[in-house]
Image 1 (cartoon, rainbow, N blue to C red):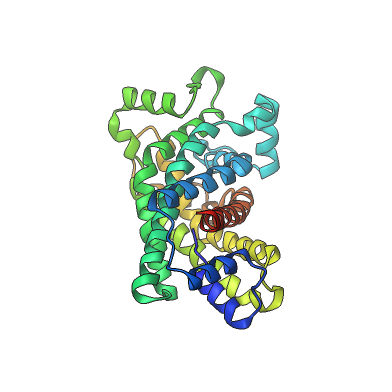
Image 2: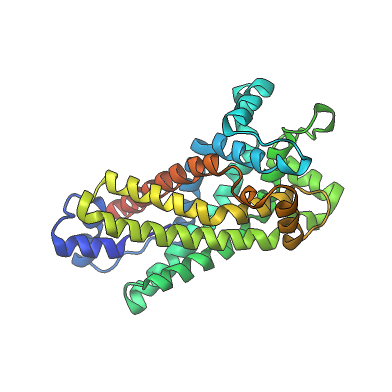
Length: 318
């Protein structure tokens, strides 16, 4: 998601980044004509890093979504542990991986689109205008978020439906076999437009999350660099901070999107917002915060590290 040219320049000037694998790439670029990763590989590397991250944190994402869907039925509030225990008691450990195929497919499309798009824009700006400003990075992140949301809508709807299916009584479950089976059955029963349900909140969420994650990670990394020096400790700490800020900012939009996509009837963002405030209270917008953060923080850590390692590997060998 985030190429680290600005940090590499800072490290090079300070003389403190000799051991950083990215600095090796920077020195290589200084000695020879600039080498650019092909656009197709930027999208591929982004998709792979997103899929690996998602496979690691899917149980937390499942619990978060179940908690967000718990309110409309008027049931009492439940904790993260209660939801997780209920899933395991009902379907075993494998129940924590309900909807995994949809999540992986969505990440291949979504992360590939957002990371590939952002890095392409970042490289273009570096070549034409130099290091982008903070505000420019936010705009780039938002733009990449829009592109990602548009590309991943069908799989996003399928993921919500597959995740929600497990909380229904057995006689009401659809028992989707995989993401493609889910999409096919949704279109057959509810029409092709069902795949665009929640489009506006999905785009809003994607814009906010990508802009917040990019800005927060960059700022945290710069602030912590003098204290930690460069290395895994710095990357981990900056990613955890970025994950926290991203979760706080993006959780309300994520809840609204989830409720709209899970609903079998057409509704609007405003209607969902008013219903939540009236029936469940304002703090419900942060329902499932803990599992959401437990998802976002590790996802950010794994994604950043894996993506940059793949980029460095390509530039080192090709």
